[in-house]
Amino acid sequence: MAETHKLFHHWQHTLEFFGVDQDKIATTFTQIVDAYNTSGRYYHTLQHIDDVLYNIQALQAYAQNLPVVQLAAWFHDVVYDSQAPDNEAKSAEYAGQVLTYLAIPLNQITTVQRLILNTKHHQAASDDIDSQILLDADLAILAADSVDYQKYAHAIRQEYAWVTETEYIQGRKQVLEKFLQRQRIYFTPLMFEVAEATARANLQAEIHSLSSKIPEK
Image 1 (cartoon, rainbow, N blue to C red):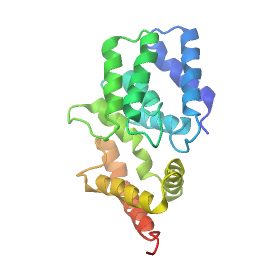
Image 2 (cartoon, rainbow, N blue to C red):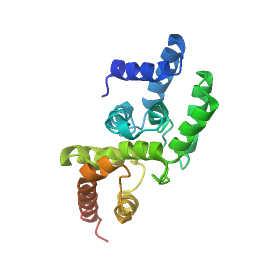
Image 3 (cartoon, rainbow, N blue to C red):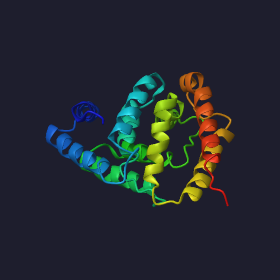
């Protein structure tokens, strides 16, 4: 579980950059924590947000607008329902409402929303470095050590507990294979260098594991 006080400090630091007052910082933080603590979340939790923010810090040298990337990280999974097809759109809308309340400049809000929407297909334009940072930070889990990767895979399965085993295996394999078919999973030079090979090995291992679980007809 992510330490709430550490996350609050991060939220506070990011919003102070925009001159937001402390009361609004505290109020909105509570709302976001409540959103990420809703039932049915096993992977898309505050721990995931903490991890993504940590990964963004490691990639911050590439950033054009670091505070906007950080805000997008906070909101990119704020609405999450594994049975819904529009989580990213709803998360972007939620971000717009909160950031408007915080009086963040409209052009910055629009950028945050664009970054969130790009997490739906994990694709970014070649010149959209801030999106690339967010996507790489979001997908860093794919290059985790085998124990953490298996925890991640198990947590995703728990979020899709409503799906039958056969359907889950089929759908999950399609998702993993799409990543493997990419020319590269990671956009930033650092992540490509340190994480690409491990991520591909993990994806292939999970596909192999899923294939071995297919029920006999």
